[in-house]
Length: 64
Image 1 (cartoon, rainbow, N blue to C red):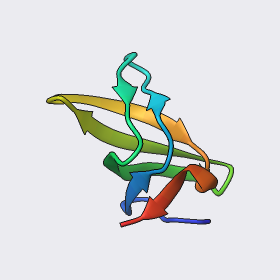
Image 2 (image 1 turned 120 degrees about the vertical axis):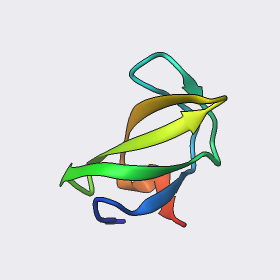
Image 3 (image 1 turned 90 degrees about the vertical axis):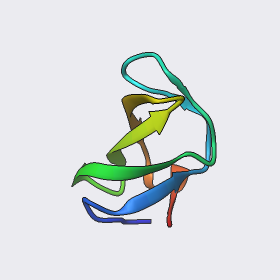
Image 4 (image 1 turned 60 degrees about the vertical axis):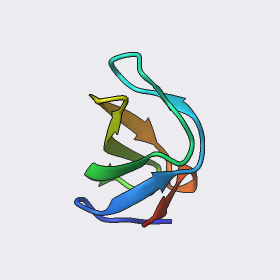
């Protein structure tokens, strides 16, 4: 699935952010880079008051 930069998405899988935060499935974030879509997106998320960024594929997110 292809989504555009600025889109809100829900993660379908648990993953780990670049700061080491465990980001659970169901977390909603914002696509901040879609240059390699649909193979990879960078998504900003907030978990327990901490901001982080995760790299996910198009199959790991759904539009909100």
